[in-house]
Each structure stands twice: as C-alpha cells, then as structure tokens.
Length: 427
Ligand SMILES: Cc1ncc(COP(=O)(O)O)c(C=O)c1O
Image 1 (cartoon, rainbow, N blue to C red):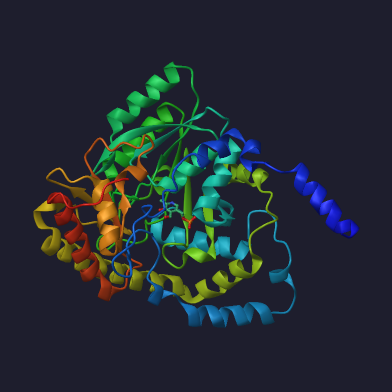
Image 2: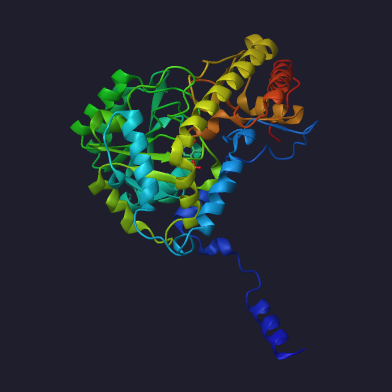
C-alpha cells in the first residue's frame, strides 16, 4: 500500500458510518422530510411509454433554435469579452431596458431599466426576495392551493406559511383580511402576501379587477407587501387579463417576479424582479452568485431586438389555446361525468375536479399505470389537505398536440378503473 492509499484507508475508517443528514440546517431538514412533489408514484410501472402531463414546460416545437443560433454567433463574435466575464449588479442593462420597454408598452405603467433586476428564473427571484426579507418564523400568506416550488422556497427560509382559500376570481379577500388581522394580533410579522394573480398555478384562476383593487387597498391598510408571481400573465388565450397589480399600484407595495421560462424555455434560467427601484435594489445585497450567465442574457437581448419575443408569444398563445381546446374536448369525451373543470383563459394548467368519490391519489397512481403522468392536487396545499375536494392538475403545453387525445383517453380509463374499484392504492 503506498502512502496515499494508506491515508485514504485511514480516513475511510474514521469517517465510517458518517451520515451527511446529521449536519443539515433546520431548514434543509424540513425539506428533506417532504416527499418530492415532482416525483412519480413509487413502484408503478406504466403499461405504455408515458405521455407527460405533469410538468409546466413550453412546447418543444416552439423553441426558437435557429434564432438562438444566430444570436449566439453574434454574441460570441462581437468585439470585446463582456460575454465571457463576470457581470455584477442588477444584470445586463440592455436586457433590463428591453424588459422595461415591453412592460411600458403592454402593461400601461411607464418604467425604465431601474425597475428590473435580472435573476436565475423567477424561482431565483423568489429565493433572493426571501433571503432578503425573511427571518425564521416570519409569516408569508399564500393562496391555497399554490405553486409547490415556491412553497419550498418559503420552507427553505423557515417562514411560517398561512394560506387563504380562493375561488374562480382568486384569493378571497374577507378571508385574507381575517388572516392578516389574526396574525398581526398574535404579534407576528407578515412579510408579504404571495399571489400568482394571473392564470394561477395550479387552478388557472385569475384575480379579478375588483379583487386586485381590494387586495392593494387591504395590503396597504395593514402595511404588508404583495409579491405577485407573474409567470403566466402573457399567455392569455383570448382577452387580455386585468391590469397588473404593479401597474394598478404604480409599484407601491408590490414586487413582481417574471420569467422567460414559460414563454420561451425553462432551461434559459432568465427571470427578473420588477418593482420600485428603491425596493428591488435591496435584493441586490443578497446576491452572492457572481452574476448571471453573461452569454445567455446577451443572447436573449439580441433575440429580443426586432420584437421577436412579441411574435413568438403571439404564436404560443394560439398554440396553447388550441391544445387546451383539444384536451378539454377529449376529457369531456373520455372522463365525462367523473370529472369537471373550468376552461382556463390562459396559462399552462387544467385543474380537474374529481367526482363520484374518486380520490386524487388513486387516480394519479392509476393514470401513471395507464401511461399518463399528472400531479395530485394535495401537492399544492401548504397543509397537504384539499378542503375543496379531490383535484388533479394536468399540464398541457409540453405534450405534443397528437398525444393530447390519447393522454385524455388514458386519464379517462384511470378514472373509470378507480370508480369501479380497480384503481391502484398507496402501498
Ligand atoms: C407560478 C410559478 N412561479 C415560478 C415558477 C418557476 O419558474 P422559473 O423557471 O422561472 O424559475 C413556476 C414554474 O412552474 C411557476 O409555475
């Protein structure tokens, strides 16, 4: 045995039995103990190759690969080395100016690049906001149900999550006020109200214009910030959604996060925090990652000149509306009176309510066995309990158009099997 080998053998002995879990922080421990919300059901072998309807990813055919190739070439051959070195601060100024120009043009609030800070997707934006604002035990109020990825963000900073039920017009304002009043009376600090105000994940619901005003007034009265997660706001299928919370308030008391993940591609990891400059500059203090990928932000900026993103967004809106129509029509045919849903007016998701005593857990497992992946409703509830009944979320943009009918047929088969007592149960 040479010296190196004997050191390795000695260290292996000394570290024998070491469990890395012993070292983790309370917050990480909290996350480890939860089932992965994106995990497929354990121990179920699909009968046929899976049709994927569980994850919110844009249609593969819409990825602008040729445009990206041209832009990448331009970025790399440009004189200078800016694309190859660290980029500090709020992010590439040209891209922030382009976002501001688009926002001013489409949303009715005149803003400049100081209103935007670039981040690693909108989940990176939420992470930065949480790390800047949250002390362990601070309260964050969310819609119920809400996007489970963000719940992980909140758990990761040991926030206390309180949630407010919603209907088809979004969060219920009376219930929200009751939660605010009770929480503040108990001496707790509420740091913000988290809403996905437009084409919500998972329900597809949009906060109505009236409720937007009510929410702004309520939040100001109790001096609680609003965090609006606007991942889907541009993906409307017909009429434009109501005016954004940011534009309605001129940014007073509102921080918004946005992303290119749902309009362009999830792998880009380009998102932003949008808000009043004094507020969003604060978040910059908690950036330790030495800036974003400088190549990608320049590629996007080049792609966005000539309003290419506007044309692209028009195309995907139309495609996702058609996909939603095919899917909902096929579900009506194949699952009929076992389910119901509201047709979404935009976004990525169909929130399916199960009837006749069907449980989401059994339908989810059985659907996987039949060859279609979906997400059980309880994943989206902070308390892991769905008081409004059993739901399944179906995501449709990533599923190829030609698979939607078959996906719905398999889902319908699963519902029937469960209703006839032939479904799969948790082992
Ligand atoms: C509401 C919401 N916010 C944030 C995200 C994360 O997006 P990003 O890829 O921008 O981090 C998602 C992704 O599904 C989402 O649905």
